[in-house]
Length: 334
Ligand SMILES: NCCC[C@H](NC(=O)CCC(=O)O)C(=O)O
Ligand SMILES: NC(=O)OP(=O)(O)O
Image (cartoon, rainbow, N blue to C red):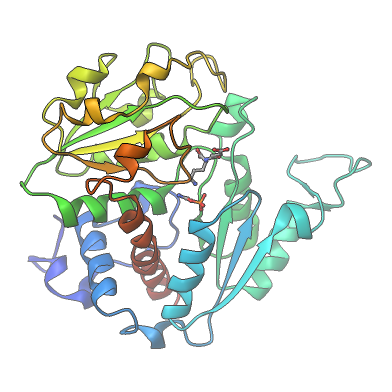
């Protein structure tokens, strides 16, 4: 834990570091301090209501959302902010992101103007933008979010970008903190089958956060589903799902498409589904998933409906994670 004036930052809420943006774990100056802040917000949801007085957050969605949209709005309102939500793809003009584009197609407005204008109305801007899953270089350059950073002139909050979902990962860490029964629990990220090609953002981000948290972290997936090395880092990786499940305290299931054969489904073996039999190999593990989840494709009803499933509690924690992050962003612009 980092210190300020020789004291742990978590001892005094006033000493929690502010954040100018929240795009990844690298923006967090004090990880355990942020987790404790989320737990404090949960205990006292309206204690910082004054912080957001006369401040506006804009939440921009280029893709669908249930949890992120509602929990981030609630979090901002708990902090006294005004909230503007826009489903950009459906409700605004088609946006051009390419520099120097001759805009004679169907895109009516360049992000240079759109982001700058939104910056005139908002003090903090949240952006959700999924990857193309066609162009790896473009997706991993985080073109959309980075152009908002460049042109909005306001702090940017990731609501899930092409390669990361940091509000989800913070929530997951807070949830593990609440449920762990030992100082260093075994946390397993397991790939599971799916009918659609999905982004790597959730597993990338989860790995990035678990690699810096105090947990014994293991990733299991079929061959060819290796995450980008900058995200898997030093995590233990195994192709043997049963071996990974042995002694696990938390099972975090998620499908993702291949990074190597970019955006492709290269395995749909139902044997990777999370079942009661596999959960029996664990140390009575809690089952986690970011949601939405495809029942009986990713995980069996029997697991999702069991007392060991904490997915609803996990989704509830999205509010407190967002509240901790927005609080620290507000602190930075006061
Ligand atoms: N925000 C949480 C996950 C969002 C997205 N899931 C999805 O698109 C599921 C769609 C489906 O099941 O049809 C993902 O995996 O990144
Ligand atoms: N977990 C999550 O981000 O859910 P939504 O996609 O519904 O926001």
